[in-house]
Amino acid sequence: MAAHVARGVRGVKMKVGGAHGVDEDLRRARSVREAIGPEVALMVDANMGWDVHEAVRAGRALVAPDIDALWLEEPTLPEDLDGMARVRALGGGVALAMGENLHTLYEFGAALRRGVVDFPQVLTYLLTY
Figure 1: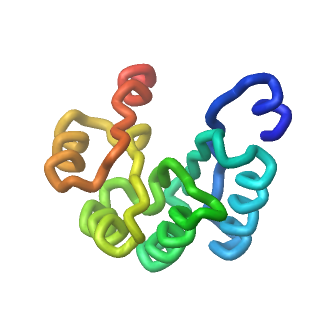
Figure 2 (figure 1 turned 135 degrees about the horizontal axis):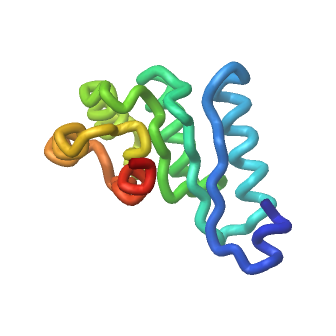
């Protein structure tokens, strides 16, 4: 990531979620933030790898100054709008991104109406079809 930033990249996205656990994900995010510095945008994509409890915990940590993530992408299953709403309500104010796993305009509309997405990734949706 530091090499990309050295070439002028102003934002990076990292993958988290899965078998290594939230603590390791957060350790990695802190390492990336340290490597890229405070001026570069850091986006974190959990690829639906956490349950709601883990996503809330991670969200709170991701907004802390030592990570300062711009967004948390798909922390849980995107069709679980109730779960995403809980992440929204309890996750420390972390901005949420989603879209690449929403497959219809109805799903996008439902997510937008529920207010569970700050960064709708509609372009990703349009480019895959």
